[in-house]
Amino acid sequence: MSVMSDHTPVTMSVHVIHGRRDGPTLFVSAAVHGDEIIGVEIARRLLHAPQVQNLRGTLLVVPIVNTFGFLNHSRYMPDRRDLNRCFPGSESGSLASRLAHILMTEIVARSDVGIDLHSAAIHRTNLPQIRVSASQPDTLDLAQAFGAPLVIRAKLRDGSLRAAARDAGVDILLYEAGEALRFDEMSARIGASGCLRVMHKLGMIARKGLPRREATPITVRNSSWVRAPAGGLLRLFREVGETVEAGQTLAIVANPFGTKETEIVAPATAVVMGRATMPVANEGDAVYHLADVPVDDAEDRLTQLAADLEADPMFDEDEIL
Image (cartoon, rainbow, N blue to C red; front, side):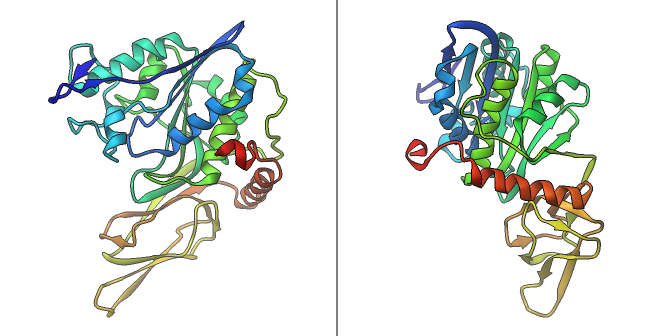
């Protein structure tokens, strides 16, 4: 693929599980952004799941796509490029472009469906959510089967893995959950069990042993960011997954001299789908990401989802360790 300045070869590890019976090929990729490490844990749990040992078709798992970003706790490639803006890549291009090309030709092109695992960027956190393209209606059924709290019809971005896979005729789900450089159990559990439920939906594994879900995902019609009206120290009062009403205080930003405080309020009734985690903000910084959904229904579904997770964990503690 390429060689670094100290002659370290650039490689990408792939775990291949072939079933004894014919079936579709699914790829699962993580750490396209090297600091989004929750996907690596989800991939590890998926490979450890007993269900994948009795498989129809083929499972391709790439736990760490951007190895150097992962080692350096960085979103980016060594050439400072965002890998998720370099697809489909080129065999003779930059380091990021070559890696994108290898992933497309060796993994995506051999697959029928893909799941790409992400988290929010550094200093932000997301409620677990699946993003799909409105131009790919078949993926909506898979998104519902995954079982994340939110399903968002998001536009494709030029140069992204999702856009390149679409152009190659491969349906792909984008899972976003948690925060960069952090693990959280809910995001990992929803991600791992969601991958297994998609495999069941595709006919790759049996239903036995999969966590049951009473709650159905919430489809997000629209979303918007609430930004800091002033710079200063940020006190955040609402967590992801909470419902807020129009006019309700989300946070307070105060100048460092203690002479002025400014409220940040919800512009409409919504569900918090993402927020900043950094307690320092500049004027105009994105602070809360709000989903435009029917709040009463959303509140019931999110409560039921939490109950489902507590009642039927996919792994016991020994299996996770």
